[in-house]
Amino acid sequence: MSSSSSSSSSSTPASQLAAKLGRRHPLQRLESPGWGFSGTLHVVGLLIFYRDFRYLTLNPNIISSSYGWHFQYLTILGLTISTLTFLLGLLGDLLTSPPLFLLKNYLLLLATPISLLISLLYWPLRLLSPSLVVPPHLPMLPLTDDLGFHFFPAVFLTLDALLLSPPWPTRPANPHAPALTLGVSMGLAFAYWFWIERCYQHNGFYPYPIFGLLSTGQRVGLFALSGGMMWAVGAGLRRAYAAVNGLEGEEAEGAMGRRVE
Image (cartoon, rainbow, N blue to C red):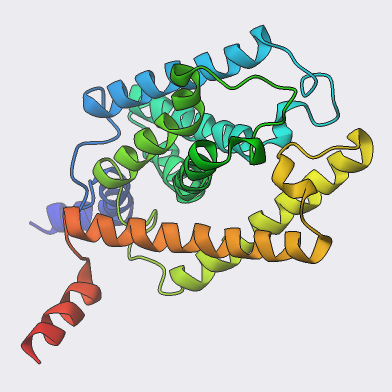
């Protein structure tokens, strides 16, 4: 009896760590990492993302030969982050690797709000005033390709976030998550502003015509607003997660307490 107890006690730290890494979060809707729906979603998503990048290489234009290539576009930066996220997700599926799953979930915190923000900003302008997002000397994208760039990444990443991921990469969730995500959102928005201004210095034009219509102060306001919108999109996504999967720990207790009151 003593030998079994000593054996179990000596193996406890390692076994607890393995269980912690390998156990699915109770709020996570579907099994992931895994070879089922998770692997299928990541494969199909990567095929769509590959098709998007292939379109860029097969249809060169003035952006292709300018400083910054197509990475001047927020859409392509978002597509790149989405691709890295799904690559990590697929590798995690194939290897059943919790560390890769964890990295995927951290990147997902960035990729999903960015992709949703791109869709929310692009489609109203695309439908109401396309000249603000597409330079006059460039043709409009065919609808299937337009959806591939500006719609499907948001859909696939949202499905991953709601169905295949925990509410926060680590457990328990970081209590400072709202402040952290706000800081990251604002940092990314102004990093993109710095990047497109650098590209403008080399190219003499902005990737999106709307930027050229604004003064410097107005552009600052636009990027501050975009950072705030990205944070709000992330907050909305967390609410959607709670609606689909439920609340965790203290959040659930707090919600029950408010209902009782």
